[in-house]
Structure formats: C-alpha cells, structure tokens
Image 1 (cartoon, helix red, strand yellow):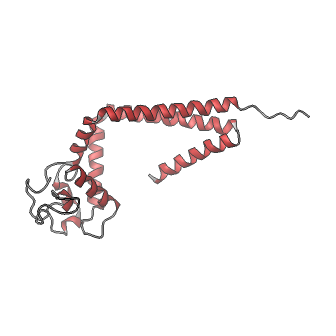
Image 2: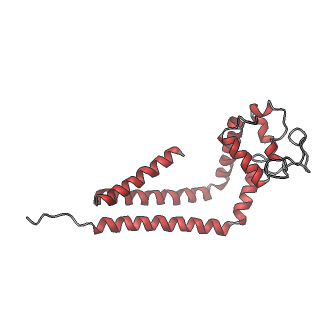
Length: 196
C-alpha cells in the first residue's frame, strides 16, 4: 500500500509540475501513464472475472494467512491486522474467513485458551459481550462462530451491487476526464517565442 501511495504521489506530482511549468513533455507523459493505469485496471477486472474461482481461492488463502501470521488475541497487544479483523467481525457479525476454525492456525490465538475471539461473540454494545463465557464456550446463541466473513462480505456486495457499479463507473469517468484534460492542456500549450 505504501508503494502504491508513493506511485500515486509521484504521478500527481508529475501532472502538477507539468501543468505548473507548462511542459508538453511532462503533461504528455502524465496523460500516457493515466491511460496505462486505466488499461491495467480494465485488464485486472477482466482477469478477475475470467478467473473468478482462482481469485476467490487466492483471496481466501491470503485472508487466512493474515490470521495465521498476524492475529493476536491478547488484549492490549493488538496490531493493525488484529484490529481490522476485530472491527470487521464485530461490524459484520461474522467470525473468520469461513468460520471460527480459521483461528486455530494462529499459534498466538491457541495460547489464549479461547475457542473463538471475543469479536466473534454477540455483544450488547460495541464492547460488552452478551455472554462473558462466549470466547471459551461459544454456542450459536451467543456467537457468530459458523458465519464466515468472506461469504458475508460477498453477500453485502451483491446486495449493494447498484452502488458498486455506480462507484466504478464514476471512477472510470473521472480517470477518463483527467486523461482528456491532461492531453487538452498539453495540446493548448504554445511554445514560447521571443519576438526580438
């Protein structure tokens, strides 16, 4: 993510400097990079659609790997991935990628003696467990132990598919507009001639 952010920063700086200095070369290169990025995005979406099953299995593998390597159940020692997983499980009322057994791959989770993370338990408020014994003795009544987050997320995306489509179309239009404007600005820049 840092590399992507750095690339976007450099790309934006390139466009800004090209416009500020009225450089056809920089603006043309900026517009060309925007076209390449748009083509790569379209290709990635097409490949994801064609290889949907492979993408799904790779995504699940990546998510399970993040639990295995980075999930920490000790209160006060949470890291970024742990906080993200806990937030997602509490907000979406789910547990793990497929179910609660995904956490058994994590050595740090096994050391706690819990059967499910506290975030997989039903809560009365955002922080108070409905049943204090839930992490050690989960049941269907007090936890979401059999509800996987991947399936829940995909159901929410399909339920809001119209919004997803409108957002994707808006992003593509903005990218096309910025590319068009970069090339228009590049074309409108007149070379500087000294009349002397």
